[in-house]
Length: 485
Image 1 (cartoon, one colour):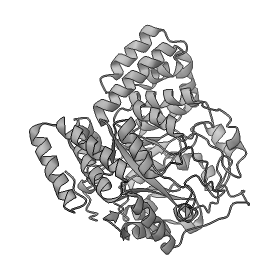
Image 2 (image 1 turned 45 degrees about the vertical axis):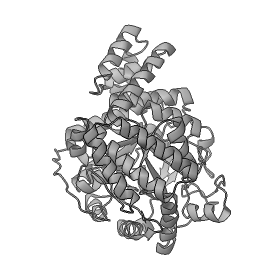
Image 3 (image 1 turned 180 degrees about the vertical axis):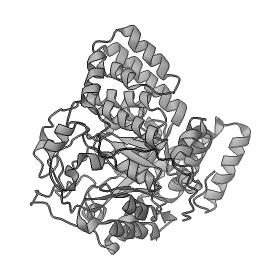
Image 4 (image 1 turned 90 degrees about the vertical axis):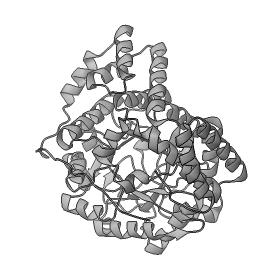
């Protein structure tokens, strides 16, 4: 695969990494001021959100404080409309690849924590990484999220070596990984520059909780105890030239209203200091994890109804930011969240090093592993997930990575997205890469349903665009791969 990149310079303003931009008192003032909003105010904010220009922290707080269920339904309608306007019916698919569960941190909510002495520790060797990638390619995956525990053996050079191995694997019917996103511990600017040499896609790191007292109470030892070092990870990554980054909070550690407003404060701070916000936001909820007591009963449990409101409100607040949902959540809930704003999902996931090979050997997609970081809610195989996306949600599974190779990243991507670029380029590219999947990996019923969906999408295009896309589809059917506009 070509790793040609066209990076756009990022202007970094002065910032003080020794001072937190999260002001607890100010956030709670906003929350309290927005208590018990009247219906007219909520509807005015929903009307503004329909313009796809985002919301302020104060406006977001009003929606978070709304207690009127009827207005929640209006909120969900607006979220669906914004999702369809900006993203259409395409859904980006990826899979996590856990390279190592060795970790020097003691985080009370995580199964990988250093004090979990029952956990069988494993860091994949290069040949084991190759086999995991081969299995993912056999599923049809083109995007990987490479995940590493924070440990000296997972230093930046080891991470780069493992990524190079992943990119090198070409297996079966056109199998290849075209974009590798990375979730690893925060790095120094110098180490982020080394990471960038591996041609990664998005660098992803979650603050876990933005509430510093809660942060300190759940991070008991290790480098992760440093709240500010983690808070400014995205600043350092962008300073090193990595212009696509992803943030998130682990919901359940503290009050969800504070976490969401603090996370949006993080977005605003990035826009102020770096000129562009995050490419993606993720919404993990605490799930049971072997060796973690707190995960069985989170301090601030978020139920499904509240979780749906969090996702919908975020879609209104940052309409052009990709929203990611993992297989932590059940199949039924993920289906609802896709409608409310989620634009990327994992499929066929395993959350333990070597988990894909182990699953293949066991021939049991529902197998549970004590070595997993957390419990999965959606155990379905890839093809089953895709079949449901097509037949029940009328969604186009997308494996496209064209923007990454064409340099449409960071502020460049955001600028194009606001010009309805996604509908013009990403939608056709989704169809082309979906045809690849259907031809190379899909089961018979998925192939039939998928091709029918492609035809219905083509019928809605202008004649010129339809001809262009059909030409690409014909080339794909003839055996060409990795075609994108």
